[in-house]
Structures are given as structure tokens and as C-alpha cells.
Length: 226
Image 1: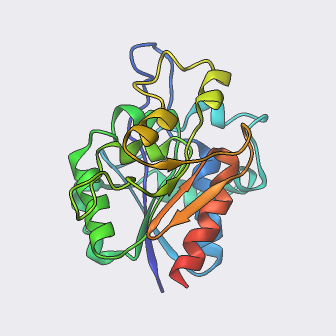
Image 2: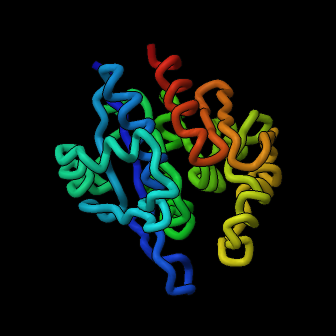
């Protein structure tokens, strides 16, 4: 059985706005069920361990999908989520791939988290897939490849678009815009229309544009591991 590591944010504050954030439920639930239904074992971790914060905006009826409805009734997975492992206890040798669900929360804790960054670089250098969806490609900001250049340099990547950030009225709140950052780091950034499902694979790197892209990212990861 292949083992997949999911890393979730521990941050529930949207900068200094006083608004709550966290991880986006759909971006956790859809890939989690896609992987576990295909026989993969998923381990959950976060910087602080324990229960990672759910973005309240992702836990509404408007944001509900088949995967989130399944999660709502899944007490076993909720219990597992309440007991995420501390990121510092994780060793990449125990896993076959790593996946980062999105949500705004990670912009303030995982992007600059050295443990997380070292882990991603270790996965990649050991020829294991690294996957990110929606806001999670922001974490690639400080990740370097074995050549010392940004990991995204020259690679086909996507992530939450400037237009999508504008649509949720957080352009002036986020520390940086993901689309701009990926291009600045030399990534070959592309996107579809706002909120359209879109995911890319380039070697070991898999990225998805937005919440609707979660299943596509999971599908690419599954194919990569089979």
C-alpha cells in the first residue's frame, strides 16, 4: 500500500484583518477520498499538530460538494483530522508522495515554514511527487530544486489566479499574489477561466488552479503513483 502525506495549515487568522481562515474543506476532502478509495493510505500532519482550522467560508452550503457532504457524515475521518501529527515528527522516507490542500490560512504559516520547505525539497530530491492545489502553490515560493534554482523555474504550473483573488476581495489582504509569484520565480504559469477545473503535471510537480481542481490534482497524483 502506498502512503501519502497530507500537510494542512495550522493558521486560522487572515493576516491582521480579524477574519478567520484555515484550510478549504473541498481541497482536503475530494483528494482524501479519491486516494483512500483507490487503496492509498493517507497520513495527516500540520505545523502545530492536532485539529487544523477549517476556513468557515468553505464549510457553507454554497461551498458544499459530494466530497464535503461525505466528510460531514464521516466521523472516523473527522477524528483523524482532529489528531494531525506535528510536522516536525515527519520523515519523507515513510511516504511515497506529499499533498498540500489549499485555503488562505497557509499563506501565513506554511510558506515560510522551514520544516515544510525542507520536507518538500526532500520528497522531490528523492524522486517522489509533490502536489498542491489552489492557494497551496504559494508554498513553492521558497522551494528550490537540486540545481539551486526555484523548483518552479521552467516548469508548467498553475494556482489561484489574480482574478479569483480579486473576486473574493482579498487582493490587498494576501501577502502576495500566487499567479505573480509563480511567474516571478520562472514558472511557466497558465490558467483557465476563473473557477474552472484545471491541473498540471510537470515531472514530479503537480499543481491545481482552484477548489474545483482538487479531484484533477488527485487523479494526476494517483496516475503518477500507479
